[in-house]
Length: 298
Image (cartoon, rainbow, N blue to C red; front, top):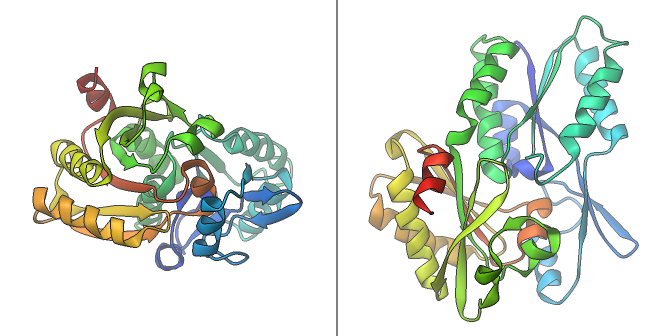
C-alpha cells in the first residue's frame, strides 16, 4: 500500500486507465443545463463526450458546480477510515472555489480523525497538467515518500507544469470569467484564433492572436518547442474538445518541431469543456517556469 492516497477532482481530466494505473481517486464536480443535472464524470457516465460538445455547438448552455461539502466529506472519510492519509491536488483557486471548501472539510474531519493527515494543495492549474501533478504524487507515494515531501515537491515544481491552447472562440472563456486579456485583444477576433497559456496566478492568459486555425497549431508547436525541457523524458498530452482530427494535425506540427516528442491524446472533460467550448485544443507539458514565459510575452 502507498504511504498516502492521492485524490484530485473532475478538472484533472485523468483517463480511467491513468487513474487505475496510478491508483488516483477524484472528487466529482457537477454541471447542469436548465433543470437537468449531471455529475462531471471523467468517464462520461451520464452523457457522451460527442453528445455533450455537439449540444454546445447547437446552443445549449451549461453551468458548472464545484465539489460539494457532502462529496468531500464522504470520500475523505472513506480514505481516512481505511487508515490512509490524503493529499488533494485541487484545481486552481483562480478557476474554482473547491480547494477553499476542502480546507473547511479538512478542518472539520480533524475531530473524527486526529491521527490522520489531509493536505490540500492549490495546483494553480487545471486540466491534464493538474492530472500530471497528481500522477507524480502517486509515484512518490508508491516509492515511500512522505506526504509532507510530496506537498513540498508540488509547491517547488508546480510552475513548471505548463499549458498552451487554442479555442474556436473565446466566448466560452469570457462568459465563464476564465480568461485574462486586454480589451484590445477581445476587440477583433474575426477569422483569428487565440493562443492561451496558464499564468502564475492560476488563470488562463490570452497572449497572442493568429490568423486561421492551422496557424494556431503552428504557434502552439513553436511555443512548446521554445519552452519544453527534456521532451524525450516526458509525455506531451494533447486534449481535444470533440475535434480529434485537429488534434492529429496539431500533433504533426509538434513533431515537426520536436521530432522525439512522446505525444498522447485525450478528450477534455466536462468541467473544463464547459469553460472552453467545443473545438478547443490544450497541450500539457513540463518546461521552463511560467514566469519566464510571461516575461517573454510582454
